Length: 258
Image (cartoon, rainbow, N blue to C red; front, side, top):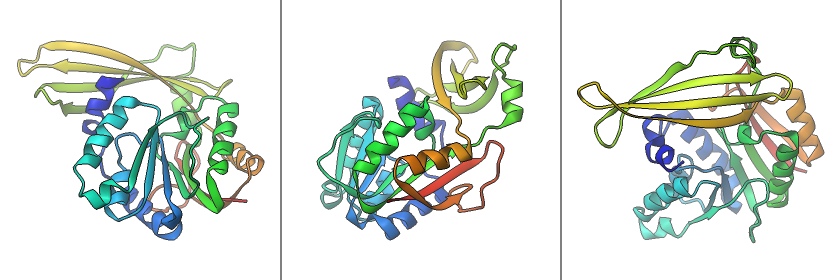
């Protein structure tokens, strides 16, 4: 997904204030023993933490995302660059020599685990890499039944326009989503379509990418955490620490290693 990585920060907010403030607060409370940023992408969380002086190990499966992150880190002052280690690995089975007082899998990272087995394996692996009483912060989503019914597997589904932005060539790109929900497996198959038009309005390229993710019921997540050795310290509905709301909203978990 090299092309996706190159335009990633043009069709997502690269530095939402509530997200940055939340991560800095968590780092201030729990991050002095080293921070593990899992599914770090292009460094939305890692860069502000490095700038603030925290030691970060940034891990992602995508070499193309990490290439962009490395370029950003290289532009930092030397005393900040040396605080960052960048590693390409799978969150389910990475093996690192260090342990950490804080780990993040925030935004969409955890939902890319498409089975309860993968979720359990990841949580156990993170648990193994945390110091005693280390803290994990990660995000899940409640099922949104309106979305499920509107995109139920086996029914006709129409794509919708999600983003419009100008790419590095000066062309406009529209990003469409088509989501198909399977309640039996809790899997969402999302087809992202990029349509690129030149200044004359002519379509010059079109590409599709398939993404699979999984929603997780709140009670299911609580049981997974109990099975894998975590205690829930807090549950929020977003990075502003609002109360969680069921129905497709964010569940932001703050958990301690037991």
